[in-house]
Image (cartoon, rainbow, N blue to C red):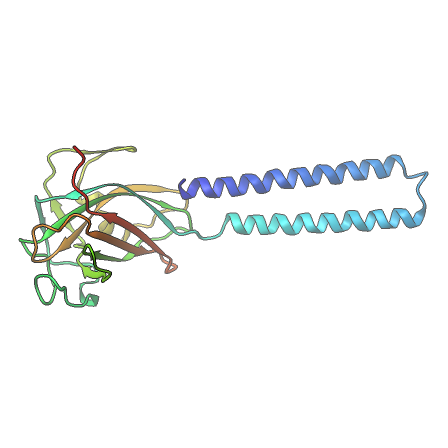
Length: 240
């Protein structure tokens, strides 16, 4: 279930509950009007106070429901596919390269992707369930089988990729171009609330061409409100 559906269901339930409560109040008021001549003054006051209290509670619940429905849930990411890719070229602009500690595999200081590295391509659908925001502070890690250490690795911010054809996804064909590279596009263009985008990200590991099956990749990024979104993927052999 994606975030836009979650928000929709929250608002719908608040609306339904509110209508039921208001219908009950209307029934009480109608009964009070029909019985007004046979009810004592003190009883009328008690009923009026009760109805006033119910109205106040309904208004409070409605306000809380609106706040819950509008809360900033941030970005929600769905992994549509992942696989190793080879036909790539990149420039030297890297996301957070200066903040990454030394990679334990390959070059001591990962300032740029090397030609012999491992490239994992992720196809993602990102939904903005919060306020309009860019996506930034992209980070990537990998965890080798049998290890718990999250090793920081590289996310090139721009790739000129030669794709043999479109990648098929449940949301249509994706042509892998620089325009739909998520790091490149979402860091400069805000994604409005309730909107979704499908694109791709490359995770690069320097100094190694292959990784063992079972290696876990972790991709994280944040919205403008510092809420983090995380994507996990386990490197597995292709299904035959």
